[in-house]
Length: 125
Image 1: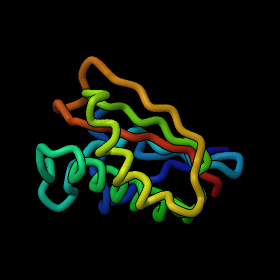
Image 2: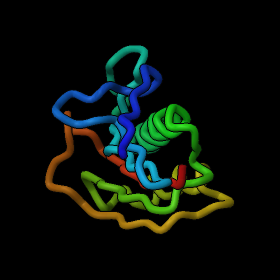
Image 3: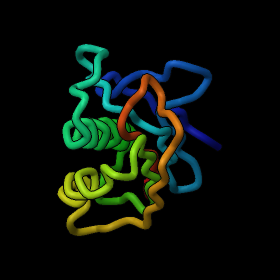
Image 4: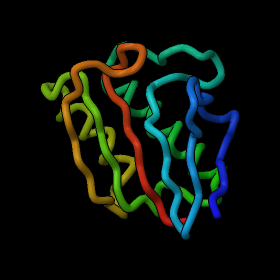
């Protein structure tokens, strides 16, 4: 059995997918980009601000699923430019200072709406 997770506190799905799916004691979050859910616009063009908003969006989706960033076991980070890894990583580290999940980071040729960063995650429910 699977439960579709949806919240207005994070950007809505803009295609045939869900913000997250909860099943088997896990929550699978779709990739989030740096859209401010209140305005529908990017928070800025800067990688640190974008990373912070992405992680806030993921936190909101996880909260709607009854869990939190503390329970994230795996993330995948997609960067438009691997040269921005250090700046992204500094912000990421503030959100995962205690319970560090497994992670993969890759450079993508292009991200939705030309975002600088997109992050998806898996968490325990």
